[in-house]
Amino acid sequence: MSGLIALLDDVAGIAKVAASSIDDVAGQAAKAGAKAAGAVIDDAAVTPKYVQGFDAKRELPIVGRIALGSIRNKLLILLPIGLLLSAFAPWMIPPLLMLGGAYLCFEGAEKIWHVLFPHEHTWDHAKHEAGDPAHLEEKKISGAIKTDFILSAEIMTIALAAIPESNIWMEAATLAVVAVGITVAVYGSVALIVKADDVGLFMARDGGVGFVRSLGRGIVKVMPGFMKLLTVVGTAAMLWVGGSIIVHGLKEVGYGWPGQQIYDWANAVAYLVPAAWEGFAKWLATAAMDGVLGLVIGVLIIPLATWVIGPVWDAVFKGRA
Image (cartoon, rainbow, N blue to C red; front, top):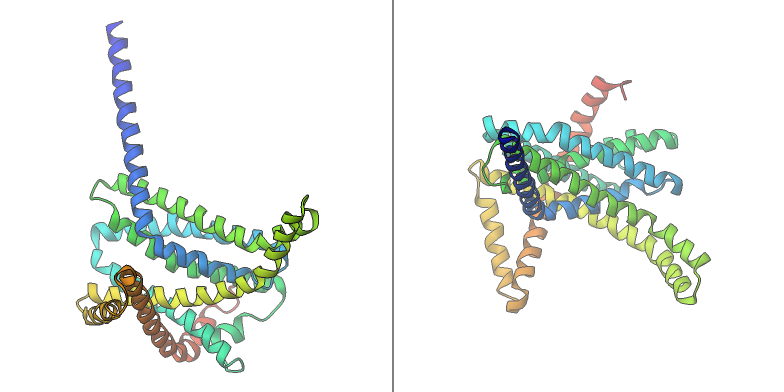
C-alpha cells in the first residue's frame, strides 16, 4: 500500500510539473505573440488580395489552402530551422531575414509599378498571371504561401527572440503554440473579411427586421471599397515590413546608421506634435520611412528580377510547376 501511495504521489508531482510547464508555454506564447503583433497585422492585410477576382465559392477554399500552407511553413520549416540557427548559427539569421525583406520590397514595388505602367513587361505579371482560372488560382495560392513564408519567418524570429532563455523543448513548444494561434487568428480574420459581403447580402435579403436589412445593404456597399483599401494597405505593409526588416538586419550586421537616421528623423517629427500624439507620430514616421526605403529597394530589384532572376527561374523550373 505504501508503494502505491508513493507512486500516486510521484504521478501527482509529475502532473503538477506538466501543468506548470503548460502554463509557462501559454504565458510565453502570449507574450511572444504580442511582440509579433505588427507582423501579424501585416499578414492579415496582405492575404485578402489573393482571393480577389475569384468566384465566391472558391474564396474560403483558397483561404483554407493558404492557411494550411502557412501552418506547414511555420511548424515544418521555420520552427526547426529557427531553433537550429538560434542554437548553432545565430549570425545567419539577419542576412536570411534581409533576403526575405528584399523579396517583400520587390513584391510591393512590382505591384505599384504594374499599376503605374500596366503595359510594361514584368516577369511576375506577364508570365505568371495568364491562363485558365484553375491555373491562376494555383499561382495565386503559391504566391500567397511564398509571401506568407517571409512574414511567418519574421513572426517566428520575433517570437523566438521574445522567449526567455530555456531548454529547446520549451522553446519549440512555445513557438508551436505561437504558430498555430497566430495562423488561426490571421486566417480566421481573413475568412471573415472576404465573406463579409456574402453575409451582408444574406442580411439584406433575409433579415427579420428593417435594421438588419439596412445593415446588410450597408455592408454590401462598403465592402468593395474596403477590399480595395485593404489591397493598398497590404501593398504598403509589404514595403513597410520589408524595409524595416532590412534596416534591422543592417543594424545586426554592423551598419546601424540607416536605422539611427530613421530613428532621429522620427523623433524630430514627434517633437512637432502635441505630447499625447508623440508615440503615434513617431511610429507613423518610422513606418513611412521604412516604406519609402522598401519602395526604393524594390524598384531597384525589379530589373534584376525581370531580366535575370525570372528568366533563370523559368529555365530551371520550366515544366515543373
